[in-house]
Length: 512
Image (cartoon, rainbow, N blue to C red):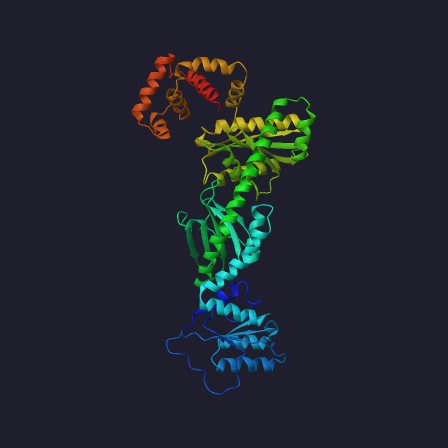
């Protein structure tokens, strides 16, 4: 019994002999293939075997389409009379306007082909079962393992070129790598991230996804997709995707290790640069030059900081992914708990360009917050080596303030900081930290529950319910702990200056 399929599945087959749609519907049904059928016989089309699919077979010709328009018309009419609705003909791209109009009137489909025998073989693979097609996919993708890719994007390009379909890597936040024209909007929402293998089949895309097993990253999936794939193709691609998944997982692990090493090195370099405070260090200058870290011209610093407990390397990866497609010329690394960097603006940027840059950073923050609880700080426009140091430091301080600025969308720009900026700078001096530790020493027991509760309480504007929700404890527990803090420290929380001093001291002692 022949399997009923349509033209879209054959056009999406990676080894279809170079098929090209010329005229007629692209989703015309077919079942079976006749090679060089006899069109000169008289009478109706041959009877189908009872129980077979009602769709007619494809007619595959090994000889080129005739040059003369009248011969083209005759071929199309005879094929129609013999019951064929899909013609695969070498050179069909040169069909006359009259021939194309005739196929439209007859509701027939004409496809041009470069290798008729390959097309016939593709028809057979699609008809019989997914096993033969899966074997071809696996054989094709085996070459991927023989050639080491430079990075994850290179591996995906190799996979895509070997199987003839687009390959992508996604997580819940969206697309991470893509070799095709782009997955449709909302694709990620339609994927079951808990399942091992899934299918997504719609008018926009036909895809299989498989969960990628790696210790370095979780919640990511390999996607193989195209348009118009039939069930037989999707089943074959499921098998192939499971075969290639370990190579993807290994590449992700290697890239992750390389990224961690690079992030550690760049983070240490930035720290050394900031600590120089204007002093010259040829070695630091050389290493910065190797990374194309410019100090000439104007820069605008930025920092993204997790709200709550967030791994800085994960934050850096997420920020880098969002910055990648943007037009901003950025450098980014880790500093403490933040992903920190700056935008290079060159010499004497206009006010409009500076504002556009700030708007671009805000847009990236909006995208990031769809999947991350993150605050953002933006420094002031500065120039030169000392200016770079200033704008980066400002951005880091601004991000610390932004963590507690829900009303401002968890982002602060230094130009609008005022007193908070000065107070944060004050806490970083050599005399404040010892004083803060002395002030809070009665709270610094083994569990530090009282210190953490006080910090969270002040972060949430002294609101007990908000503090309890943030810490996941009962409001009565918060009230009892705050009462105990007042007894131990002998302070008056009604005094706003006292609350400000305690707030700064808490963050200084906790190192954030």
